[in-house]
Image 1 (spheres, one colour):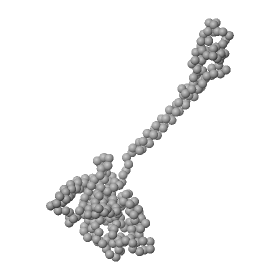
Image 2 (image 1 turned 90 degrees about the vertical axis):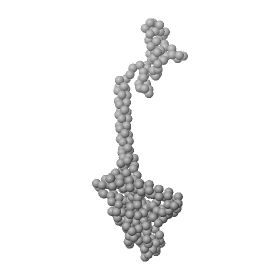
Image 3 (image 1 turned 45 degrees about the horizontal axis):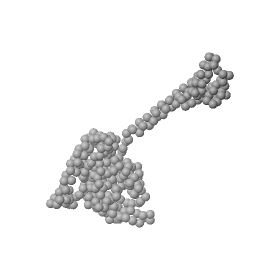
Image 4 (image 1 turned 180 degrees about the horizontal axis):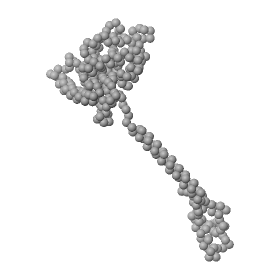
Length: 304
């Protein structure tokens, strides 16, 4: 008869052996509760959760168990190493090439549209304009200090460069030149323009400049640290343009290709100052302040 070795059974066997040595056993029988068992029981080793139990351990089974435990510990160690490497890879800093939003909601009011200081609205506007001008002076100083070794920042030259880039972006959009459009505009502006004008046929041309381009304002946006700064500059461009949108049959759907219009554009230029390999790119277009109730779409081309 084979039975699993339990502590109670082992105790009974030990007591029976003591009685046998003292000559007190009866007919070589062992009583275990209500069951009468033979004294010559064969105890079989049984595998449990904690290992091999029983009166004696099998050396081969013990070696196998030790080997299995070592392999499991090694596997857990390798898994922890791969998990730590994955976490370290997730903690590596991401390289952001664009801010993804515009720091300017609208362009400032023109001089002829500003309210008089005799009214409360005029004094409030004067005070907010004064604070914005101080912020602009500080932002331009930071831009000049950051770019003095790479690309010196001068407002007049920068405004001219921004106007040329504005013309180049519109030409690339008209000719479906995606590489040039991607290089001259930010990621957000590129996908916005491609979504709005990707399937349309239109004609755009700047005939002449009615006023020299001017820098109106500048803002900074630090991310995570004070050194990781994005700069955006608002530029005003007043020009005479031609704009027309054609449908599939070639009929003019919007605008007029024969009558030029005077258009004032407020474009936003962006650059990552912390990246030495970055450059100025078009980030969007904001409406003038007088059109606060009815916002224009974030596009570069003129709209009728």
